[in-house]
Image (cartoon, rainbow, N blue to C red):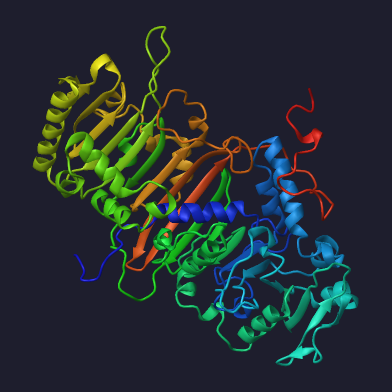
Amino acid sequence: MLQNRPQLKRPPLPLVLAAALLFVGGGILTFWVTARRDQLAKTLPAGASAIPADALMVVALSSDEAQWRKLRQFGTETTQAQFDRLLAQWRDRLLADQNLTFERDIQPWVGPEITLAVLPDTTSSTTDLPPSLPAPELALESNVVMVVPIADPGRAQSALGNRLTKAEQLQDASYRGIALQQIDGNGETPLYAAVLSAETAVLSPKLPLLERAIDAYRGGDSLVNRPGVGKAFDQITETRPLARFYVDVPALAQTVAQGADPPIDPSRLRAFEAPRGLVGVVAVTSRGVALQGVGWLEPGTQTFATGNRAEQMPQRLPTGTLLALSGGDFKQFWEDFQAGDQLSALFPLRAEDVALGLQSATGLSLDENLLPWMAGEFAVGVLTPPPGSGDAPPLPNPALVLMVKASDREAATATFKQLDTVLESRYRFTIDSPEMGGVPVTRLTSPFDSLVMAHGWLEGDIAFFTVGQGIAELVAPSPSRSLAENSLFQATTGEAPRPNNGHFFANLEALTKAENSLLLPPLPQEGLLGSEAIEAIGVTATVLSDRQVRYDIAATLKRGDRPGPLPSSPTGPGPDAPAPESSTPDASQ
């Protein structure tokens, strides 16, 4: 039933995809490597009571060395070397200036996970400016509070006792009854510490942030009190994560936008205003990495429409689909797109430009001729172009298909007839009506055979429209093998709930081999996020309630050699530095 309140109705798939890529690619996942405990409790991140409630982002990283070693086995020889250098760099990011090493000074006593919280900058002397987030490469050196659980107090005292001194900036070396100390080091950036209890210590390069953590611990507003956070973590089913995280979505988006050069237009941030927060876990699987997240809305006027109606489209698309986007209601999907609630905030494509271009070319109004009958499950796919015939090189082929379960078949039929008339009279397309496996198909061919389009009906009132030579034959009457049977699709979406609200799928392994597709985006070939290391990415959204939505994101990775020891230098080259000769693919030649 429709509600009186405006509804989002379709969770923003691309929002979480972008957040996940930022989270994985930013380096904060790669901070600690050591073994402690087999499982982490399905609760808030360690030390949540000492994290101020206005934290922009919180990441709790497992200290299970076996999990990190398992992650390091993925990738090519080059990307494995890059990832190892990244790990080594971030492992000692805060420690190197203090002449500390993780293995010697932290590993003997640390607990099962270490929590990092990025806080808004409220210490700026320019009071007219809003709180800001430092650049990603500086974030862990400035606006961070690190909560470190103490598994062995005796060994902690033995390792660090003679390195702790009174905090030099304070006359009173305590705050609210808790001693403030400074780790004695030679670096320009100090590192301050406070022991909250026999089980918990906090560290920060800024004393005001350390005091804010103490305030939270002493009964102030902490992450524990943040509405929605605990309930969202309760929905997470993964019990042995590599990392757990929390993101204040609108606050983080605003601070990133304000710190950008040039600043990002606030109108581009509408997609990030509705979701109040996002929590989740990252886990290492047998095929790569999986992220499970839950986003929620605060009490207000907006809600998600309950119900997950996306069930059958993966069976309708062929197994060679390169890119796919599916959902439960195309009409609502487009209305969200038009309102700027999701895709338009992430991509330069504007809904009004698409609608205007369609009407100029065909005379069809998206709002009047198409959307009224498209309130059903849908899929958009870019397929592997079929091979050309003869000796001539194949022409670029769009290889595009759109399928929609029609909510009004009569209106859909009238729209297709109007399209046929326009293409035949205005653009001199020729029309024929072949049968494909018993399915009547209307095929439209442009002069000189430069473009072929087709439309028809599949079983279950599924209307399909294809663009490209030989594309209709791949979907009508049904594919010989479906996308649901593709092993990469199964690996990246198989753990998601069924039914759900839709998928996004990208077969990067096949994308790099497709030669004559007209619609494929340029892909990064090298680096940790390049197609040389990642085989496929899948994203699934599932509505849990009118205010909660779950996201399952998985990436299958290529498997590399067994990892060796990490680089020992805490101040070695950064992640973008060229690999040593012995690590390059050509070193043995």
